[in-house]
Figure 1 (tube, rainbow, N blue to C red):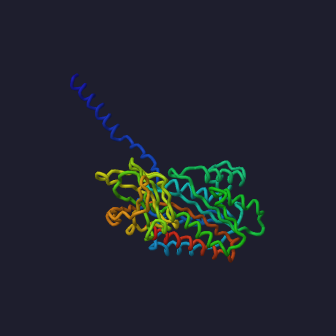
Figure 2 (figure 1 turned 120 degrees about the vertical axis):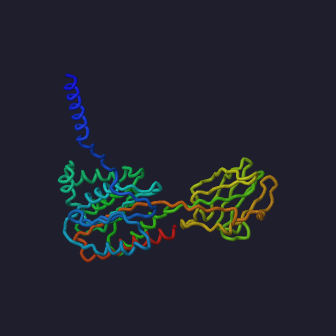
Figure 3 (figure 1 turned 60 degrees about the vertical axis):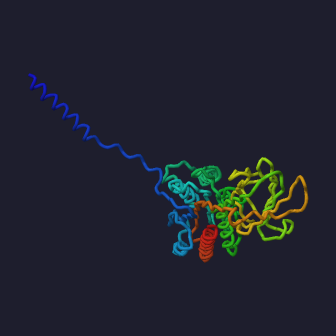
Length: 375
């Protein structure tokens, strides 16, 4: 009896082990992202459309080294088909954007859309592939406008630009409305009557996008004591009055700079900065993203520091103990930008398609040059 009971218990235990070992593994949760980008820089993705999305270039880092490859991809596009799936393509590009993980220093996300016509096929794609409920193009366009202007992507709002060259057969108000609805602000909507200026418009947008690709923080270190008025002179002028590139400020007894005024310069630090004690009466003051009015980094190797006592008065005197080579520190904080370029390649462009390709290539050239210069 005991032997039989032992055999039965052994059989049950074995069955349990087999049940556990044969249990199907739990499915792995779906990955949140399709791609992980780890290097900072400017990343460009291109969607080309006519009767649907006909070509897509995945996010590619734009550098002088990749510039020709990207332009070659643009040159390989062909103009064909009459249909225009503009809304569906923009919508799809935003869905793809959500599936990419960018570096934590992502600074801006940009959308640039070009067309010469009115959408006439997006509702078919949306309803057949996504089971969406857009009754007509107008409903889809309203929904997309809300997405472009209000939705956050990776914690950022879109900087969206719509560019259009209006065909003669299209109602001007309807066309402008479409371009505005693809833009994050009405001011970003660009409607042209001819193709001669399209390359310049693309170039201007490219320059705007890369304005803050890098941020340069500049720290000055000097002795503090009492209340003074100080001036940092950047252009080599002999006196503060002669300088066209300078920072003026009040140095307070609590070791803060207030009433800061920038001439020929811009900084994110605003009009007040709190000093950090380095050693005894030596304090450091950091100007966040200090740059000139062309948004270029400034040279700090030859900065002069002038002071005048507010309590005593008198002319400015140069602080000869201030050595810019050893008492200034510049830190370049690199930023990442993501850009989506949506291009109409429908047959209605005709002989103007080459102008569109030239404009897109100019766009890439400026991105690559800006990326190199800002670093």
